[in-house]
Length: 111
Image 1: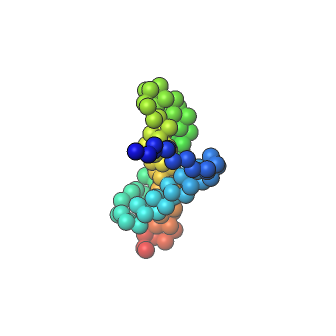
Image 2 (image 1 turned 90 degrees about the horizontal axis):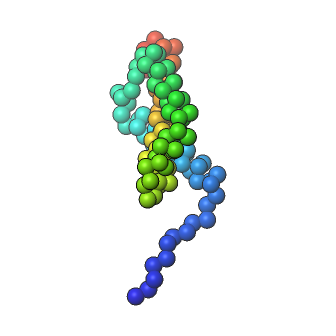
Image 3 (image 1 turned 60 degrees about the vertical axis):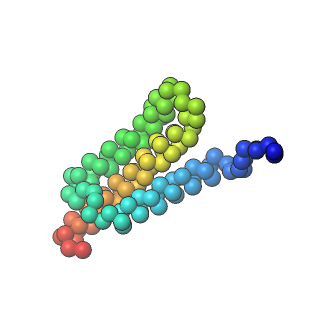
């Protein structure tokens, strides 16, 4: 029986973060196109959503400390895919909703 070796990929942290952020932007774009009636339509709702996404981004270090204090066996995986990816996806989605509200306001609601 052969020994199974863990897979090791040589990817820099910068490259991984770039792929993570690009993936979040693509996920947000998919949600925006797939669920076109989802999200705020008013300028107030769009600004509130975008501000909330900024608060989530600023809070990432605190969230990471909280997850690390739980003592999970693979906390890094949870931090990347359970925290960072959803937060960045929501950040891009909220930005797209804000732009949609601005375009609706400028065009008089006709699309």
